[in-house]
Length: 251
Length: 241
Image 1: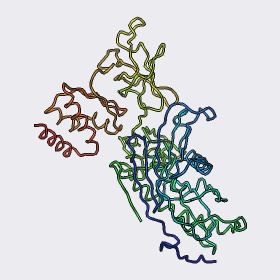
Image 2: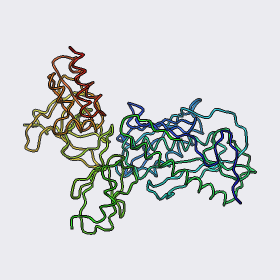
Image 3: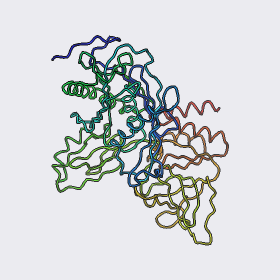
């Protein structure tokens, strides 16, 4: 059951990621900010806080995180609320919430660039958020699996947003347990895994094709881990640059 | 006994940029030693792990901390900061010091302060204060006196101009020997300056153009080396003449 090499529209191999670019401290008023781009998908994250006070339903013994997602075009709807909820849960598991109790940190995510090309082929999608400890050993603390991605129009935005918010949180000095890094994996109809799919390669699938084998899922996870190692190396390199709004690029 | 055998692991991280999640020190080999952790580090079971991105520094024999520069401030005891009055209550002034919580300045924390001569600060007054108590769970407590009870330059700052910078630049300006930018500006201009460790700087001079020049020079000097700072100040002085 060797995976077959797939010909992708932009000439990448199935394991190749799009060019990554990360700029920190882009916004002057925000306490922390980062702009993360993977190919044409660009996300800008701004962090404000910690500020005193929490909302009524939040636990005052811990810091609370508030996420606001702003799409590139259009009004805020259910899709954006879903992104906000997923991002909030991810960031809550990454931040050390007991250091500053009874405070609120706001993370605002603005989608700047989105692959705007028409959808062509039919594939089923699996988005994985892999939180890893920044040592040489990759440990997945939380593999958040989102099936039924029919509601999410462009699933590769979420990993980009997670990477951007994590870089912005580190820029703002919010205490973190570790840096989170995310990657999007796609499963083609011929059951081979491709990493970092663009919008051309994704499309909503019908319910009948939602079945996939467990071995494919683990295959996805393995490829995802390897790619996350590369992304986390890149994130570490971008943290090491001292000057403000220093641009680090890689392919 | 003081030299730690597992130093080889920590030495590889010292003076290098560390990222949240890095385990910088393994404690398994150090049963009877005390280690003092400063900003940005925490104990995670059997290892010391990093909370904030920055450079790991060590002060022999056993003090570790992460040096980083941010726009917000984490209050520490005995820091001198610039605060802005936000509100006044019966026994406290609420002062914003760019920290996660508002600082509390007791109305009696002034030299010779009694209930009869409580100072009247308007909202927006800039104060030079000292942090007395700092705890993550409580509002930090401030004071306008030093330990002996003297005023010692604390209190409201009148006139002048206040601007905000990062905490890293404020620390650099407060370093001793004096920072090259302040020294070279002081050779040709006369100005008054108050620097808060929370990233606020107040500058006062006889003429507004001097104030603007000094403020802009300081804001631009954050990432310059000592030589570059001197060159920048020389160029500015030439342009003035």
